Image 1 (cartoon, rainbow, N blue to C red):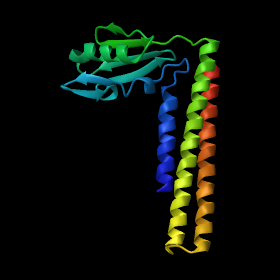
Image 2: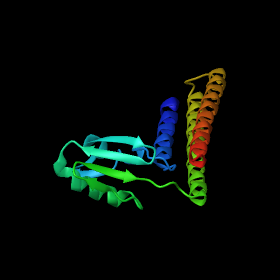
Image 3: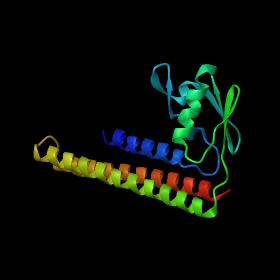
Image 4: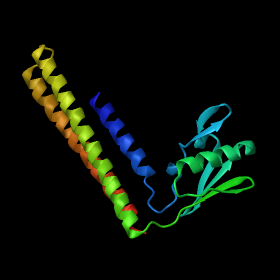
Length: 178
């Protein structure tokens, strides 16, 4: 259970960091945008081919040309400051390089996400330790087993905190190097 919860936290952080636009076009920014198509909301990645032929350009090629207006509407509603350009069968999204101030704001946002994830990891650790303590009180595990499991829990938390720090550092350098 502990590893599963820790993995969910890492997956959440990975997804949120991918959404931070670092001056480069990334398919992660658009692939999960909900588009009204076929009487339901569907993620863009299920409706079109997404590619980044250039560092500052995303090209969206819908498989069904009849939903191109729906995709354009969803992109306009979701991506503030980005103007989709419809070119008969494809949609182009051009991204400008962020200013130094914008990059610093993006770094602050990434650091905040990293810190929130670390807090979540600490909460997972505390609930696991409380559960272990309860097991020991109910005589389900011995005191020695409790001690060993506490150490395993702390090691897992330390390992995941290192992964979080690495992800944050990588994103920060990605944002600051243009």
